[in-house]
Length: 462
Ligand SMILES: *[C@@H]1O[C@H](CO)[C@@H](O)[C@H](O)[C@H]1NC(C)=O
Ligand SMILES: *[C@@H]1O[C@H](CO)[C@@H](O)[C@H](O)[C@H]1NC(C)=O
Ligand SMILES: *[C@@H]1O[C@H](CO)[C@@H](O)[C@H](O)[C@H]1NC(C)=O
Ligand SMILES: *[C@@H]1O[C@H](CO)[C@@H](O)[C@H](O)[C@H]1NC(C)=O
Ligand SMILES: *[C@@H]1O[C@H](CO)[C@@H](O)[C@H](O)[C@H]1NC(C)=O
Image: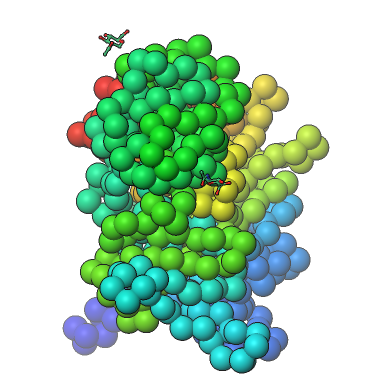
């Protein structure tokens, strides 16, 4: 009797829970192990891909319906276009129950197949006593992970991600007072002493106070203590004595564990593994994707309980098609953004995007309970009207501050032009751009925790 009563109570709770959690809408299920040819999205016949599920929402779904994704790894470029929920009955794309699927922007790295022999290339060390391994791979990558730990682009002066020394401005090279815009003279002899020809490497230049720019090194040769670069930054705050820089992305700079280099022309990957091990014994993954989800022309959509690894979300409006009412709920973004400097691409880093239009009074977004961790550059590009950031964590983002092409007032982890923003109970720590919160127009900023010991460019500002 007691047992059946308990069963009944549990059962009633279960019903209640289902009704609440599914908002009375229909639930379609995604499972990456699904073998079903003609899946209908039920628990017994789940879709294999998130895209199939999104298509179902669009074709047979009604506002309030949901895609629930089973735990597992998903490497997809999901297009979400023209999903029209209502404010009370948004569409929802979420983890199944409490499960958290991993949306992954990386692929496993294996040596490519040698077209001449039909066999896979092997990993080889550069010389007999070298710890640097190399192999040819199939697809260009611009970020490397070993056992899910981020490696550091080969650089000088050295600093790395794993001990967070990458955030220490004190480790960057300093400039001599003889430096001018476009002409960097290293302070002391350290650049000359590398005895490396830095031409065509990438220089990360914190030469504009709150501004860091990126440029190719020109006119350098081994033993020379200065270099040139094309100065296009309209930077009127250049003062050598408060400026600093580092150089990366050349094979000769690979000289310590956890550094890597990729030669796009020969498709050769070089890595010095964390313990000097062979890459054969570890899981290597490379970033090949900027956005895993691209959302256009959509109203009232909730994304919930999803883990993003080395990939991001883009929600953008065009002239005729709006994005409005999108909620980012309990998403974890690990390493969401990364520059393509390793591929010689020095354009701005592409961020997570939530872009409405503040001037047209639309683009309302809610960011609730998300984590943004390990992004290279800022995390979010936001524009819109009525944007709320509630209970989110920003941690260990942006070790370069290289978020601009020309001189501006500096940028924080959120690059926003939105109107009517509310920042409530967020934590910003160990992010190293010049400011922690740089809100859009007409913001309210309440009870946020702002701080962190790494001071690359400036004290903590709001
Ligand atoms: C499904 O996810 C698991 C991890 O849970 C992963 O090992 C597997 O490769 C994924 N399958 C596919 C087809 O992506
Ligand atoms: C370089 O310039 C700064 C600021 O103008 C000055 O304080 C410093 O003494 C100068 N250093 C040398 C070595 O001349
Ligand atoms: C320095 O490197 C550049 C680019 O690889 C090359 O064109 C140039 O000849 C090198 N300079 C010297 C002196 O070796
Ligand atoms: C916040 O997100 C975490 C995952 O990072 C989750 O475990 C937790 O339940 C969420 N909290 C709320 C109140 O939604
Ligand atoms: C913006 O928020 C205000 C206050 O909550 C509300 O009155 C208004 O309707 C909202 N406007 C839009 C376009 O969401």
